[in-house]
Length: 295
Image 1: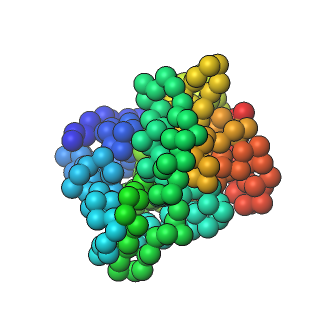
Image 2 (image 1 turned 90 degrees about the horizontal axis):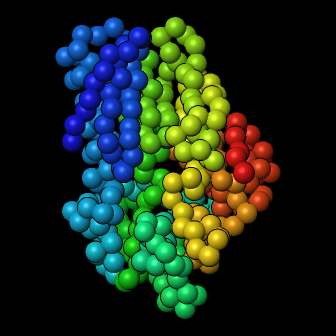
């Protein structure tokens, strides 16, 4: 785990990898190299801590322990409960479209090197293991039914961005912007008092900024299928799965960006919007938060 630090016109930029994404922290503060590195490393380590704790790809993570212990009661700490509560809230607000127990569907939907789609029979075999209503969650314990698996994709990275922004404030880094693979969080505006300028990638041209929008404080998150999808027989299948059916959503925007008081809420709204398919725009209008759609 490494952090690359570069001087910028207004301070420092720290670059690192986490959660399968390129990450960047901008700090607009006049600090010597050693102090800037120490502070930004502290923030990066918080992101790595959360990644290690909730990655389903690391066998010794808390999440893997819960999954391996399916069928039995597993003790959880307060942080884990709060994150699982967010997942439960997403399930409720989406009427089951988003479901953190849909991790088992990744056995047939991999979206990496995949050149065919699963059969309905294959999906039907997995659907009995999907359903938050089968999860028993208290502030101190969780119990999954045997065979079920949790996947906190759509929740974990946004939470990490908020935690990192909060920690920056505790460290006295008043002008700091966290960018974890496009999930943005900041506890304060730029050193000159102006808003941060956030580039939204053009969903049709990977790597190219389509438009730039201001963010004074809070969070911004983007959900879409620019990077993860499978195309079979001329049809594009998004990696956003409707947990009720086990199939990718259809008719949804290619990309949804939402700004909110924090990144976790922004991420929830962008994910829920995609799961509303063609009704994403009216759903977001009801939320009252600023949003940007690309079809």
